[in-house]
Image 1 (cartoon, rainbow, N blue to C red):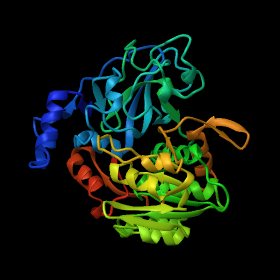
Image 2: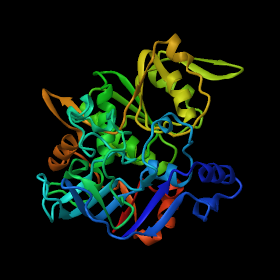
Image 3: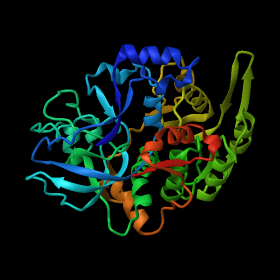
Image 4: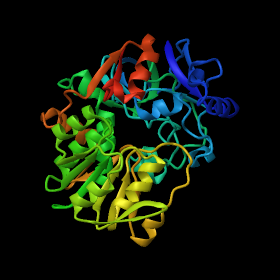
Length: 402
């Protein structure tokens, strides 16, 4: 079974991180913690587990951050014991090939998408913890308080490979009327929808989407559906991203490298600058969705939010940088995290984000045309990664066809 994985080998990770600036190719060298291997097929690790053969898998920024060793080993999650091997690829569409004797949700031949969180951390269900923690009991498995217990087996394989083993709680059924392209976008679409639902805009509010990669574009689509009366401004770096943002519903698209003045104009805010400061808006956006999560975008976002507004982190660069958060204090701005997806309260119903997205797709109300721009077989993974990492390629979503 072909697979690409990342080992949490701290000395190796630090060495590659130090060498990467002078030698970018070190991430493909024998020094890298990432490996492309052929693994033996392992038996199912438990009665509620199943085996999936992959059909298609998208490349996510989280995968790239690990492969390119951009994640810093001293970030907060590193303090929590976890798995040592991370199999890359979680936007995976596959077919169930084998089920354990106690699997009830699936049968051989079913199409599924991976619902496990990107790093594949265990939860109460996969570890057979009874009673489950309060979050797993509510279906919020990504917030499991027992994720680091180390009980029971772990799945083998991921989306960047031929297949994987998973607990039945870690995959989600795909309706027959959705094609594989739509199915491969369920997971990133759910991340965007969950982020918007963490702080939905009210009618008439000015909202800003920072970053027009695929998550930012899907957030624009989610905003246009969830809060049709809001005014959406998007920050895009490349022209093809700007075109897609307009097509999906953005009212204004900004491409300036220093957009402070233009954002002040759009919101009728007052712009103040200082010799040692890029600027500050007084009276900016009610809600900002940061779909990049870099130190620079967080630095700017809290300055573009109006007093009492909110910044929602849908994306996050797993690195350490000093950030001036004083506007959060002085302007009482809420900084809100959004971790993938989970159970949502929507129009009087309690349901999973995946189900919300699937409903929209089946109604024909969730556009996906043009979002998958590049396709590669797995053995061309280096070309695929280069296309996904360098948006000058015109890439929005790059996918492996397996």
